[in-house]
Length: 122
Ligand SMILES: [Zn+2]
Image 1 (tube, rainbow, N blue to C red):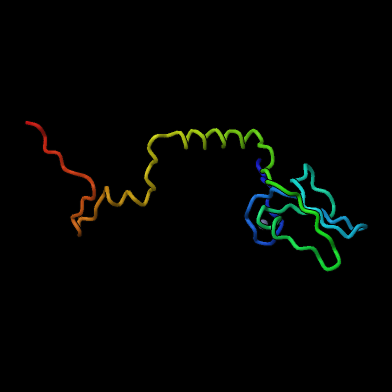
Image 2: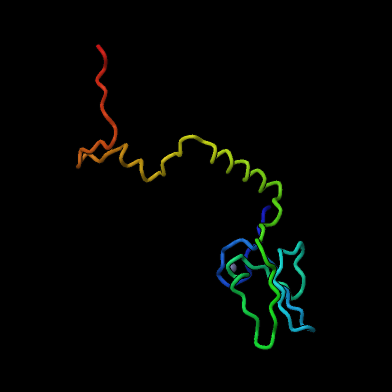
């Protein structure tokens, strides 16, 4: 069962890409790449929260510079990635479902959208 790591901030649905670690004896909050294992005093953060983190009064923040990378993909993620790549490689983007209304115009308007009636060829 998949359980992608989420940002630990209340109500934040984004994927965690960084881990905040409070180093209490140095009064330092370290924002680094996502840790492999959750440990005490660590909090997973999404990128916006990692970048906007401010330390408590009297604390220093040591922030990882550069890009936060998403965690290494699991097998499931690889499958999802492959699907996404296939999706992106499609020459024609399928229209979103709500566009289907133009293909089935309501009888009240008589609109046929972009569809034309082709008479049979007798
Ligand atoms: Zn967040």
